[in-house]
Length: 249
Image (cartoon, rainbow, N blue to C red):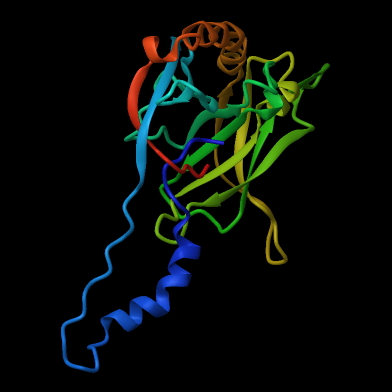
């Protein structure tokens, strides 16, 4: 679950559609109508406590939020991006992110199954409405070489009709690491599932670096200790920032 500072616009648009149409009509008394301004985002002061560590395979950051009075106001927001991550230009065809939100009081330990692997895909052609991304581990079979007999898969959806060449999928990091036990890399294939008119079709493929994901998990306990030490005095050791009063994840 990645931290987002925006609202899902679809329900809001559906609710406002009749009102927006009425607002465009001229008033019956001939006066000029007033345009409806969007509601401002409400913010107030918080203390944001961050700890960050650059790893060989990427950068991992933990954030904890406190009120302006110094009281705990949010869990530990974790985010990890690979070393080559560029927020303006995603790696194509596959880019990975890790994200998670802990409640420090009830979840002191790190549970890899609660960490989300965000799969972001980009193609030169349009994605189908639903596709599958499969992670494959090879099994050595003597004397016939290597075959792949199982796969871990999850669905991939386009971001929308406005962006059909880019899609996204998610799966638990713990499941991916368990499936990849004994391997430092996995192959992946983006597949259009079969239908009544034809068979499956491979749309893209590549490898996933499992070793860097294990590195990120191994760094979490030390980072959480560093964050706990820093947040012992949040008003003295953390940054005071304006923060949205309401956040939807």
